[in-house]
Image 1 (cartoon, one colour):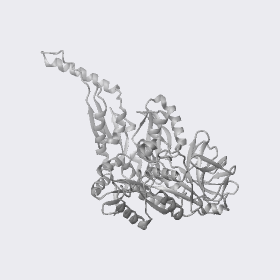
Image 2: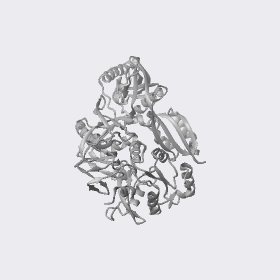
Image 3: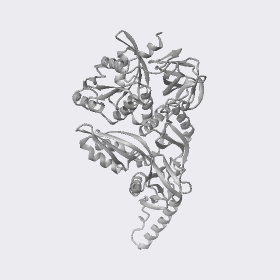
Image 4: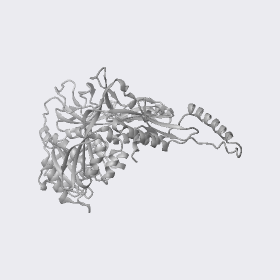
Length: 605
């Protein structure tokens, strides 16, 4: 075993930051091949993306960490790659992974150039004082434009063009140069092995047999197998039953020291007890301060998830609990709806997170579920107590308008990078979504970065799809929350046959309420099948009806037998039919098809 000082001098902790599809997972595969960290038998594409869903969509949902050994100029080095998810919904995980590193590989696709997520993750890395190594990937593609994209990177980073490493993760070009740059340019970890233990938790995974496996990076001190440890955010104590380093398979060790990355198994059975960003310390020799930057993960988007068959409610609960063990950022609470029966109100980090949870419920647990319209969390204030916010996660929780002082909604800072041809289209879309432009920067004569402040509620519906459509797929989008702002919001209720359907209620801005109410009524008229009686569909704000459509009744021709003779005989029969229809309407039930609940999302189609 080499001395701790030498060991620390030869450790490099780095992460990879890139936009979706710029070749992050493929590059990680090549690095593992080149350093001999995987055998021929273990090789496969997207090796670090272990979920089927990740492989199919080509995205990283869960971050992974892996240790590689590499000999350079006769010295042995330990390289810890801390992989990060690329999507904006998981930006808190990205920030914690970046905090556990000293360097980052910034990967830019030579055909697509710089995108919004690359920039937002790059700023995160720069805030943490990471050494940035720019890599120009996919230079072997026929559509690659290496000179121009290198200029873009130089303008963005202010580095020298010779520092940009041309590479192709597919063919293996430039991999050796990347490893050399990591050793030469990324600083060795700092920290003191003699101080009390301070370890940053940057991820956790749930193992059904052994409980929660915690991944951590030691900033100060060391941890031995069997030590009694404390998680500082939760204040809970455990024993370190097993510690080790993260190869492709876990490698148990007796001790892990300052600067290194490892895993810890304590037999915790509830994933909520291990929080990303928490600090681990020794119970009998506690660190005086926790590592900065810890925050609770806050759900941004809320939706109801209901079983299609109400008898499956308990089964759905069990599935959600199992899923939560794997994904601690999913929060849910039971709720009931008059239209859909019993189900759960769930909180997600964003729309992609919601889509993935829904898909995992269907794939891994065979649950067919109905998802209601997603919405965000609002703060309502009463006139009696104007300083105490009432948190509104569901439109039906909104207090009575007569006693309402104000409503605040969450705002985001949106950053959109697009070609200069589409600036007008993107601006008009953002202004339609109640956004206000705060900045416009030309990154190159062809590419523009636009910054907007806009309500989060406006982007949870169809914003991303429409942005891709108007920019012909060229716009990239990234956002970060900037707090709550006062807004003039009202609840639009939908009444079917004079009965309110709570699952179709929506909180919308007053200026858009009439348009949305009208569109919803028209959409439902198309989707709800005709019955034996007239069905009025109404949109209302409080007691005021703002829009109405009527689904006409199916009519039997009762006058067919009245040929010839007096008109009053026909009229009498029709009046009799009308009375029957009226009575039916009073006791009739309207069946709402599943697609009607999702129709609200596609109002612009």
